[in-house]
Every structure is written in C-alpha cells, then in structure tokens.
Image 1 (cartoon, one colour):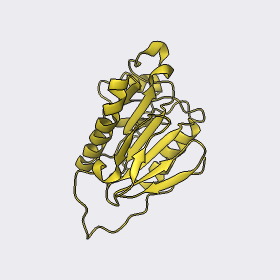
Image 2: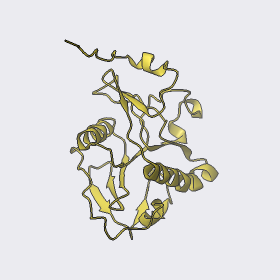
Image 3: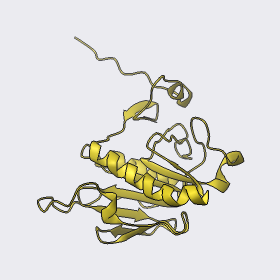
Length: 202
C-alpha cells in the first residue's frame, strides 16, 4: 500500500527563507497557494494605481502589492498572509521605512480580489484573520459581479455596485474611484449577480 507523505510543516522563519515564496502563504505551518488569475491581477494593478496617485505625491505611506507579507494576527501568530493589496500609513512604519521581508504590524487597508478558483471557506478564514488583526478598512472585490464589499473599523459593512464610488476616508483622505473603473473588462449581460461570501462578524 502506497502512503502519500505529508508535506513538511514549516515555521514562519523557514517559510521566509524559501528561495521563492511568490504566490504562497503559510497557514498554521502549511504552505498554501494563493488563487490568482489574469483578470484579478489586472484589478489588483488598478487598485494600486489609483491608491498611489494620492499616496505617493502626498507621502501618505506605502501601497504593497500581492507579495506584501504580514505576520500580525494575534490569534494565529504563525500565519503569514499576503493581501492582494495593502496600505500602511507613513507614521506607523518603524523608523518611517518599509520593512525588508515580513511586516509585523497590521496594514491600515487590506484588499482581496476574488478569483474563479477562490474557496469560500478559505476567504472567510482570511477575512477573519484581518478582523483579528483589527485592520481598519477591508475591501473584498468581486470582478464577476462588479461589486466591492467594504468592512469598516466599527464593524459595519456595505456592498458597493458598479455605479458607486469607492472611498478610503480617513485611511487615505480624498481617495475616490468609481467601482466600474476597477475592472478591466466591460460587464457581461450573461454573468449573473454573484453574492460575495460573507465574512465572519468582527
């Protein structure tokens, strides 16, 4: 009888020393691949672009793409998460500098862009970790339904549609973009309105 060997469990330090952990996260010692497609990657790039139009000239902080790695979850201290997009205010960065390697403070904003291969349970677990870290602003972007689910620091949530504007006050003052401008493809009449998987309550 063939017995499949389980992959070795890694510590965060071992994971950080891997020669290449692009597109990977560490969840309770297990390496997990982040689901990512071409469309979601394009949405990520647009979110970074629109944020940086204010963040860079105003020296407000730094926008990190999907390889920005965080270890800041009190209930799961050995988890290494990579939000699709994140932002940290300048005044919260240690010595005002972007860390080399893993970030050990929570971001002020975290965004997740849904991909066709995303699993509902994995997404809910990830958003629960973001609540655990007390990230003040969380965006869950759904390209197929062209919506954004916004979670605020006070525990409230709202679902924005194609014609709504996405803002980030007071995290990124003055940020405003039309939801439709986040998506590279025009709407498809054949695509039914999807329901973004609900995240656990804060």
